[in-house]
Length: 163
Image 1 (cartoon, rainbow, N blue to C red):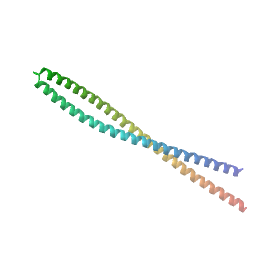
Image 2 (tube, rainbow, N blue to C red; image 1 turned 45 degrees about the vertical axis):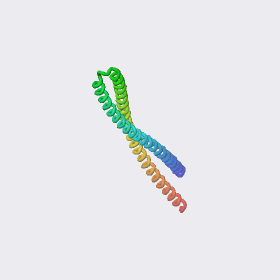
Image 3 (spheres, rainbow, N blue to C red; image 1 turned 90 degrees about the vertical axis):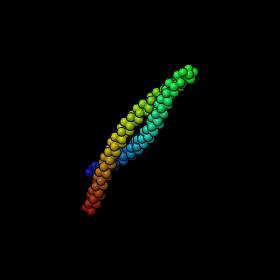
């Protein structure tokens, strides 16, 4: 009867150890996935930051071009045909500058959102790593208990055998 309880307890410990090992593997996989997501988000941030810089340079160029064309348009006011062409070009450049400015704002917003998401993923990774560490500690404790129980059973069987 006591032997059956010991065997049952050992089986429970084995099942619990197997379950813990499985959960540790699942958590490791989750961490790996989140780290890959985090790397992807960091790459996206880098890409958006680069794009942001390119767009800012484009805006500077376009604004300089707008100033040049405004100045040219004022100087050639006496030439009606040239003036109209320059006005059209100026309007087109201003529209391009507005479009570039809108793209810059959208890129900045995406960058901010991605940065927030990256922070969130980093927190998730830390939480999962902590949970994994707890599960590994539990697994180590359960393995020690299992070994101790096994030793006790072996000692008990040896003592029973010597009787």
